[in-house]
Amino acid sequence: MIKSLLVSLALIASSALAAPATLTSKTSCSATAVSCSSSASSNTCCSPKYGLVVLVQQWVPGYGPDDAFTLHGLWPDECNGSYAPSNGCDSSRQWTNIESIVENYGPSTLHSDMLTYWPSDAESNNDFWSHEWDKHGTCVSTYAPTCYGSSYTKYEDVIDYFTKVLELRAQYDLYSALADANITPGGSYSVSDMQDAIQSAFGVTAKIDCSSGTLSDIEINFVVKGTTTYIPQNTSGSTCKGTVDYPSK
Ligand code: 5GP
Figure 1 (cartoon, rainbow, N blue to C red):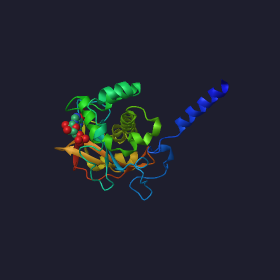
Figure 2: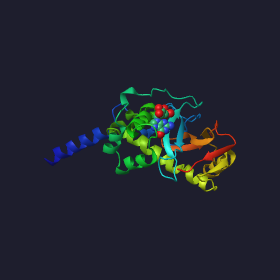
Figure 3: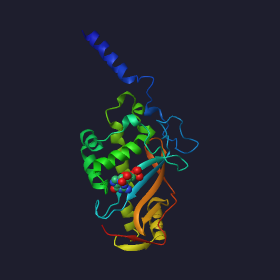
Figure 4: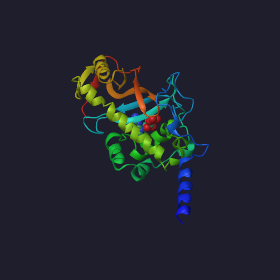
């Protein structure tokens, strides 16, 4: 009886440990490979296939906390800055119900953090989040379900993507970076002073975008070390020129 129990336990343990040959486990990835460099892995589970990743935050009066930029998205691009496919990268994982996936499969704080920091100014939050996932989230190759090996749980890729984007927003808190240089909403500032503030907070330049002279979005590019460490890069192409209006929310 004890012997057969031990045999069963051994069988269960070996089947849990041995991932099917077709699956690639992230545990075997180099932690020091850097996307868009000579050390990048050709295994797209280990280095993102689209290795230049753009974090886009927006400043939209009427949306989100008075003291925070909100999210537009996290976009994986080619290393030369060309966009990933505009219709997304994996049609088998495009969902129209991201809000309910986040509510039902994510940690309890994920949905509330998205409501706070990722509101849509143009359509329902669900439609905006589903669009961002379908077009951009499915292009983060390291979140492909096969990369999780046999431990993958339903929608883990979706939850990991949105969790990472929120983590980056908090880490690259543009409101605080600007406020630390006395650049606060309700005034006008030179774009070079804004760049200096971002440079002293994060060590890189950003793409600061305006619409008719008013601040609209700020983008920061990253390369990815291993699968989870995002390293900011100088980002060019600001459309704001001269003086920028930074309105109160
Ligand atoms: P993108 O394709 O650049 O990732 O996202 C832009 C699309 O998302 C547009 O179709 C736009 O209408 C929609 N959208 C919905 N809500 C927002 C929002 O709050 N900000 C921006 N920039 N686009 C939004």
